[in-house]
Image (cartoon, rainbow, N blue to C red; front, side):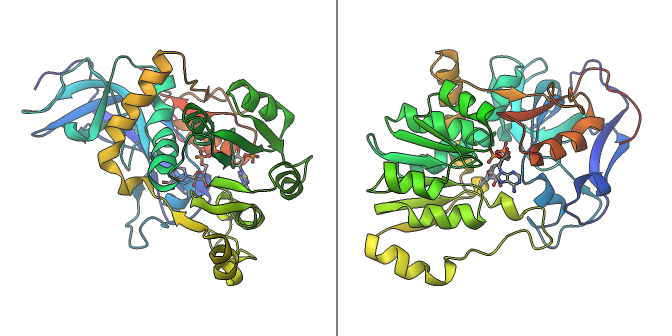
Length: 353
Ligand SMILES: NC(=O)c1ccc[n+]([C@@H]2O[C@H](COP(=O)([O-])OP(=O)(O)OC[C@H]3O[C@@H](n4cnc5c(N)ncnc54)[C@H](OP(=O)(O)O)[C@@H]3O)[C@@H](O)[C@H]2O)c1
């Protein structure tokens, strides 16, 4: 096994018990550095991605039987620093991966579960979880086609920014919801045709007046009243993809009730419309090709990848595992733009959360 600059211990964030209050249950712990076995690699994580569902995971909503303390974090990008026998990559290779327990300075992963990259670059990180969710779901579940109208909710966020651009690249007309004028400008900059700041404009009325035939596909990540509005705004044969329901994640149940749910059949059937769920971990075989496509579009200048390292917020910039809780709370502040990323340097501070 080849290796370089590997400490004898590594740090990671665990959730001590089940709760959606990330900061209250997250703790940095130290353990002996794991060694890569056959087919495995040890990755020095340089950037980890923050996701809305980080709090669903600590709340045990991914696995009600999850055992605590539970390793946290979904995704990381870094460099291979050691490789076990028969592993696919050697030290020095830039890789990213999406795997539970990513909030760690170093992590052992199976080499066939990582995606090789041309360089260690934060701008690639949005493509694996957020970008793949957008691109794969719009293609496979939303079945978007050129000329269709696509509505993206939470459009200025980590996954929303890619959904907007992916639908534009497919030749769709894109409407995007957001909560500030700064985000409206951002959405214009990434090509969104009709940004809607729902704190100033009534989305239901905008859709009714400007899109009287309805929207063909909705990328719906918010839930509650937003979900209801989107269902009512579907066109004939429209498809709504349930991407998430963030509005309920900070509640004890994890979701907020939908007003239209009881009458959903009567709302959908007359329009031959449908509501479809999407969960990224059910589409693993698509991850590699879809990341490569996004990297290609990015390199060709056809797709932007905006990362938010927290420079504009008092808790930022986000550097080191100590800042992960700040970064998670920043996501719920509704102020972030693009994908929230925490940088893990070579020498991260040694204090606790
Ligand atoms: N199904 C899957 O496999 C999958 C994978 C990845 C992500 N997701 C889902 O995609 C959604 C976005 O996740 P993300 O990680 O990319 O987050 P994000 O969009 O970067 O950040 C969350 C954004 O959601 C909007 N939002 C609306 N209501 C909110 C509320 N009550 N509290 C907080 N934010 C609210 C805010 O934008 P505005 O203020 O501008 O509205 C906020 O900036 C989530 O629902 C998540 O669960 C699903």
